[in-house]
Length: 357
View 1 (tube, rainbow, N blue to C red):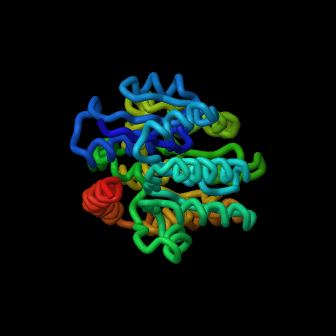
View 2 (cartoon, rainbow, N blue to C red; view 1 turned 90 degrees about the vertical axis):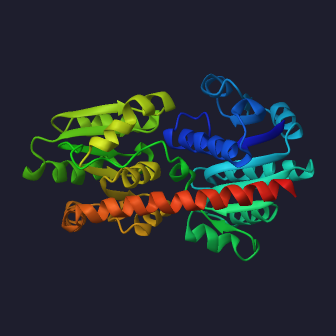
View 3 (cartoon, rainbow, N blue to C red; view 1 turned 60 degrees about the horizontal axis):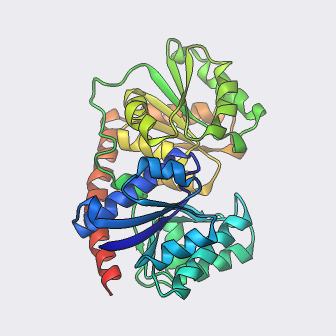
């Protein structure tokens, strides 16, 4: 039986990270062409009971327990970092140090170290950057999700690959919308930690325009902390509804439809932008982090940096978006689907080869 461990920001109640976990498991199953029952997968989670309830066939372990870490890594052939930007110090230096220490532990125990679809940074100090370099140098297989991350690793990892964010690789998760499926609905995704009450005013002014009369505003929380800012915005927008979609179950039953029915998405969350692209929904990114800007740039979607957020900039980006042919946007989404499917096969082949060495 193949035994592997997966680690990331899992179990923290963030939809984006839970989708990354799902995609990582799907990729592993496809890689070895086996049934789920024939794999022993350890999932290191912030909430092992929650993760166990979603994946009863696998072993959920606490990422904060040294006993669990040792047990999980020792009983595995490899430790897999499944997507996300775990090597950064924007949230805290402690997080970056933790993931470096876990990487070092895996190698000290003689295990393979695999990085799948990783984002890297931003870094606010050189120590964090150095620790990340050390971790990726130890990698037996390294794939990163954007050009900026590739620039970071290419000088010391000659086999590193650029692959899409792992959520792209789940081909069954979100289909392109049909031409007649769009409704008069606007989808909004915000992060409470990176937007002030003052910065809400340009959004309120923007959505109060006549062109948005009669629209339904769907305010989506990818994490519970998003509710603080979304509830404030909801009080100022007519016909607005706040949706809590931070679990896989609610995403499957409700979240997908929100993206497929929307005519426009205004999103701070990286995976809200990605899912908008994937569903063929027009999107304006609100860039609080370089990863959002990078994603929007990669598909020529407009974005506004949070430090320059005002009504004029929003209006300008909206006009740019409206001037785009809808068929062109659908074509971008379709091309990304086809590209990621091709990369998926290549990634699976490379992953198998790295684990067989």
